[in-house]
Length: 220
Image (tube, rainbow, N blue to C red; front, side, top):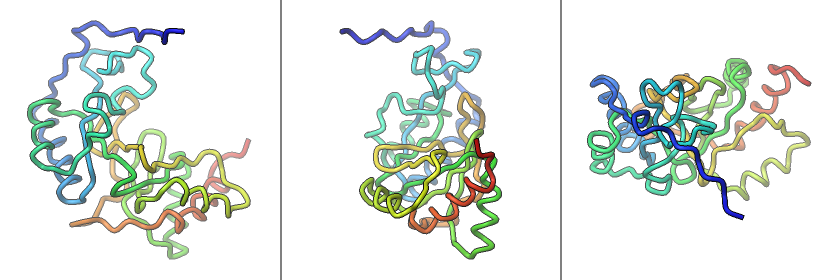
């Protein structure tokens, strides 16, 4: 059985040339992530102007417009500043900044309404945490990289794990500020410090994440 063809957007919708300030901010963010933090990055798909939230990947049914890898693919993510400059100056100026997870960092996220409660809980209990991203729907806590077997072992030790948690490990990616996806802007709730940011082990955060999901979210 042949796979269904993607319904492509008209060519005019795929045009993308943001303002000078947007291009400058995206390049600076990509270079800071790659050079300053040591995180492999790549430009993501975009939401072209006048496209009513549609994605430059050309798929009318795209579930995450402007918030996923397209061309180059995720495997091309790099920390090479020369490649980063070429991408954001020549090939995809102003494009969203994506970071590949698994090699230099990982993450765990939970629904945004529980995020502030979680951070207060971690501070009150003395559990250190690293940079935190805010997206339109979620709080994303960056962690040291972890393997899927390692994560599976940690989760198996817990009597209950909420289904609302998401794990961003090998083969995944995150959208970094100041990117704007079709769902809205991404911002830092807690910015990375200078130099290579310290990242906690994922196991140290699981207790707080589970508690926040049980206490701060409505239970259906």
